[in-house]
Amino acid sequence: MKKQLVTFLDILRYCLSSGRLLTVFLFTVNILWAFLNTLQVWLTGQIVRVLTEVLSADTRLTACLPYVAGWIAALLAIRLITAAIPYERSRLYARVQKKMMRDLMEAVNRIPAVCQEGSEEQMRIGRALEFVNRRFDSSFRSMIVLVSGFASMVSVLVLLGGYSLVFPLVSVATSLPIVLIRLKQDQAMYAMYQKQYPANNLGSYFLNSLTTKDSLIELEIFGAKELFLDRYQAITRDNIRQRTRYFIQHVLHGNLFESLLILSGNIFLILYALYLLTARPELYQIDMLSVVISGVMSAQEAVIGFAFNGKYIAEATMYGSDFWELIRRKTDTDKAEPAAGPYHTLELKDVSFRYPNRENHQLEGINLTLRAGETVGIVGENGSGKSTLSKVILGLYAPLKGEIRVDGILAPPSGPTFDRVSSVFQDYVRYELTVGENIWFGAPHEEPKKENIRRAAGEADADGFIGQLPMGYETTLGSLLPDSVQLSGGQWQKLAVARGFYARGSLLVLDEPNASMDVMTEASVYRQYYEQIRGMGRIGILISHRLGSTRFCDRILVLKDGRIVQDGSFEELIHQEGLYKSMYEAQSQWYQDGNENK
Image 1 (cartoon, rainbow, N blue to C red):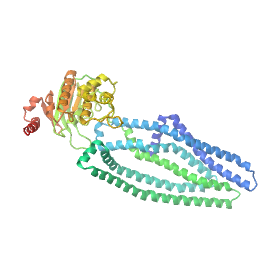
Image 2 (tube, rainbow, N blue to C red; image 1 turned 30 degrees about the vertical axis):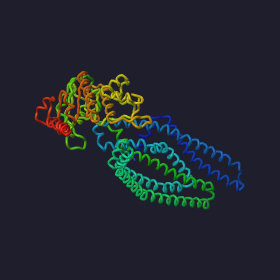
Image 3 (tube, rainbow, N blue to C red; image 1 turned 90 degrees about the vertical axis):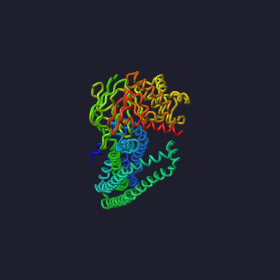
Image 4 (cartoon, rainbow, N blue to C red; image 1 turned 60 degrees about the vertical axis):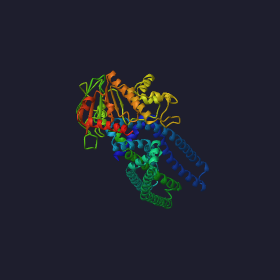
């Protein structure tokens, strides 16, 4: 109950901070609606009583008019409130949801990049997003209605208690088991949701693969479409079986028991009311029977409705647990402001790093000094730690051990080491926006400058194909909009490189930027890269599987099992017996064999 109360207060806090007057208005009209419903029940009883007296010729029909007028006025007020509440509630909901989404995004941005690579953290973020986008609506509505439900429940029970305590007591007694049944149903549903979530993610992956252009082509070539479809349908069938079992075990049996309980309770109370009318006619009149019949049903609905809306607060506690946990989570260290440039040296001293939930270190005992105006190539076998090292240098991953110093000053333990960096990763992002925006995102905190965007595009050898697009730099890319243009993999990669060049950061990292480039483009991009590093006093890091790409770097680092095993220029390493020479000769032999076979 404590958790549910905290959740209720959290939702209330969001409502008040998003629209104080709107929140107060909604609470007020909902409470008024509850009292008007109870007033209608009482007025109905008075109308029945007066009509009975009119039939017995003891009272004139005009005596009934004030009660009828009051009943009609209450009905009109209820209708008016009922019409106004949804619109005002939707306005407040839109504001609250917007603020919750912003808080969630800020919380996600506080999570260290290395933690976000874990599947468990990704699922937590996914469930939190699903809660805000899909499941929070019912909890929000319930929070607004909960207060009116309480007012309705109390007022109608007090009205019934004025005739006999038996009426409110039996009404509550027949309602509480239903509340417990529904809470048990919710717990079972939540357990099923948690169990099905990973499988549902996998099912979504299969479905997306069957509806995405690139994956569809490959699935067609390999004849794997039926396999993906079968696996998607298998997950769907399993979900249906689980939901069917849930429906039979909890919903069907529960609803049958609820109906029998309500029916038996209502029959008992009606018989008891008839008994009081006949046994104590001097105390009880016919209006009591009318109030009991409508009031008991209203009381049961109020009790169940109050609990039902409270149930949605409980659901917000369960399904929203990931959201509440993320927005309350505190980072171990506050992000410090990155060091201001220009820089002369970047030092890594005895740096080690390990991914969460892994036993082996991905980097161990790294000692390295990088200097401005210097290009450093990083090579090694797959899994040697090349990309991990670049992300530690960029400040995306905090070292498990050791320290990073910029011009001799200790860098912050979290957050970027530099005020601005340029990076092109092998898993670059394809922004389905305009061409110009794809490049400008290299420095989004500054106003976009067309001349700089064009210059970066030229440096990345992207200006040629951009000029052939329907609207040039204003062309929308991707497939979201009707007039969007889809690019080839090499063209997307050129935009990613242009984005990295546009940033003009103190550190420029290229991580396998040539995967989709032809030889001429690759040569042009690397020429611009070397010119930027040496001409602008920047620190450059180039990661590549193609050892020839690093030939003109000032230094080359060779990694193996997370350690630097060689460090030197191309001329130095090619004349040393070691890993670099053996890898270079293996790649050279491939090209030589290829030429011999022609």
